[in-house]
Length: 332
Ligand SMILES: NC(=O)c1ccc[n+]([C@@H]2O[C@H](COP(=O)([O-])OP(=O)(O)OC[C@H]3O[C@@H](n4cnc5c(N)ncnc54)[C@H](OP(=O)(O)O)[C@@H]3O)[C@@H](O)[C@H]2O)c1
Image 1: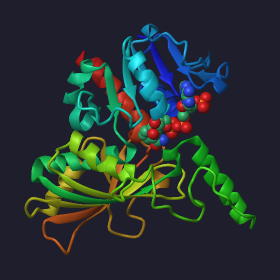
Image 2 (image 1 turned 60 degrees about the vertical axis):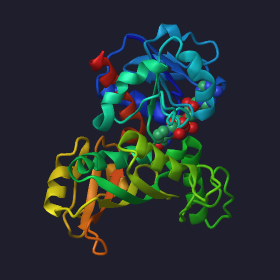
Image 3 (image 1 turned 90 degrees about the vertical axis):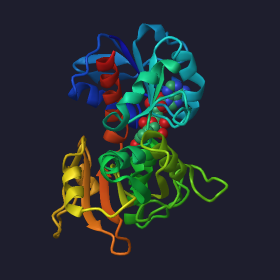
Image 4 (image 1 turned 180 degrees about the vertical axis):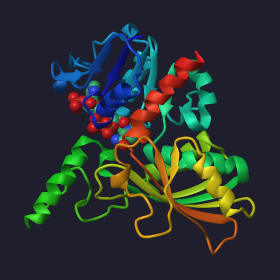
């Protein structure tokens, strides 16, 4: 089976290569595609050197699966063309809410993959949504979730290469007592937090907050109410989330803990003592989504709080994408 990665030089693209190698995802030929400025650049992968090729003249009938991680504009223009010849798994937000396109987190709704033939496209969910729906799914199955209030603490790698570099450059300048002028971020990110991810909508929410609400409904259950505040923090990798989850009825905390301990793709680290929780730095490079600080909400008997941390480039993007491909192959 031949495969292609569009956006192979990007943050997610490079992680896709890592995951493909680690999971031993089998392929015959691999094509690495990026923008014109990268054509001819070399990437060594599994002891073989590949030359980056351009998108516009690539013949997608050469591959069985094309992984796209090159952003929405590229997705909008090129995926419909590619999907006439191959199966596309896309990381961008562009197709996620299309009712004919499955939006998949394999541990949660792998069954939806059967609809991939509608358009030959499968959408990978937003990084902050993926790590949230993993623990929500088994809790919803047991207790029925009514409403979620979530605040995110999202790392700069979620915004791409350029933003990652900007955090580093700004941090050095601040420490050197030099003046900082934001380039890709709207405000200084070093030693600061920015309550704004993606574009603003008319109702005052940002598109990232809208995505969390609507993707959770599409993946899990349209009856779940969700309100989000998404914040960019000066962390390199891994997103953290503080979630308040309200069930239809009262619940038992011990059962919640048991369910979360067995939740696919999750690991509970919750020791109720100094350091007995996970931080984004510790989750970096790990395939699991970590859950800490599980506790009752004293203001509402039907609600609880938890802290959820996951590597946004792995489960939030590349790992989920490869898992989708693995599921698809198994199902076929
Ligand atoms: N980062 C995350 O946590 C995360 C999580 C989930 C989903 N996503 C989504 O994944 C996508 C990629 O994100 P990223 O963080 O990897 O971005 P990135 O680091 O900025 O990389 C973008 C990639 O797209 C390529 N590209 C740009 N213009 C192109 C063109 N005209 N033709 C072909 N390739 C082109 C770039 O190639 P050059 O190097 O040649 O410019 C690069 O390989 C985005 O849609 C993002 O929203 C990201």
